[in-house]
Image 1 (cartoon, rainbow, N blue to C red):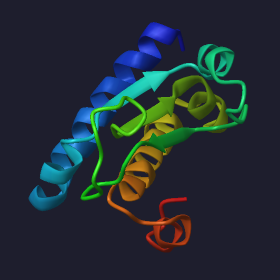
Image 2: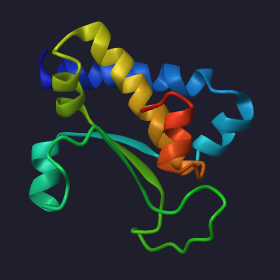
Image 3: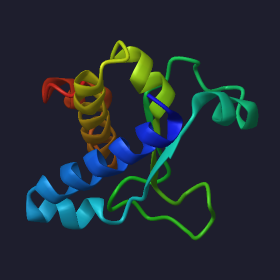
Image 4: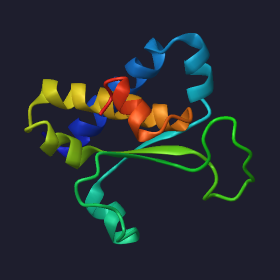
Length: 123
């Protein structure tokens, strides 16, 4: 699938996932932008990123105090090329893995640690 097509599918999945969240979670998650990226480009800017990273929550979690410094502002990054490869280059598996990865990172934004996110089946 071409990068543009992956981005279009991702945009659709992201909108669907966010729209289907319970209203209280959707309102909280609305404060955390979701961006789609390519790991090669992201790793060029930040060599510390693992090559197999699917998603990443950065910044302060919901309810934590933060200033306007860019590093403290929350965001979720989804690495489409890695999700595509992880899904075996299967479109339906890509959609499902994208959904799970997004929900996983939303869990981190809401303050859940890795064990709590895994307990919800989002790992």
